[in-house]
Length: 154
Image (cartoon, rainbow, N blue to C red; front, side, top):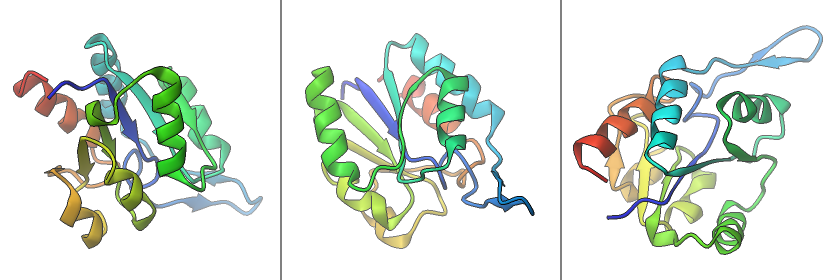
């Protein structure tokens, strides 16, 4: 299978799906630095990457900027938005991996060539995933995916 695009949900994939809310209302999350390294290695493979998240918090965009990958946040219909992105970028959905963990990822995971889920994803998501990582959300999912890609020479 040729891979042209990898799309990541944010919360529960790049994070452990938890949020720290401070007294002033600001939120903070934890991301895995190994995943940041893996994003760079996947870039070196010539694969486009995108964060597609329903989350509206600016931390999503900040992480994408740090990783130098594209980001669509505050997205209420991931399936529709990914279809549009792929049309605009001339990328086949069949050559797309989507990594998601929640019920709001189900529809978009059904239209891609390779749906991927972390070990602790919602049971409905696990049912449709073609690859389930050993890692849980925020614990190196992208690193594990990178290793899988290189081992399978995709």
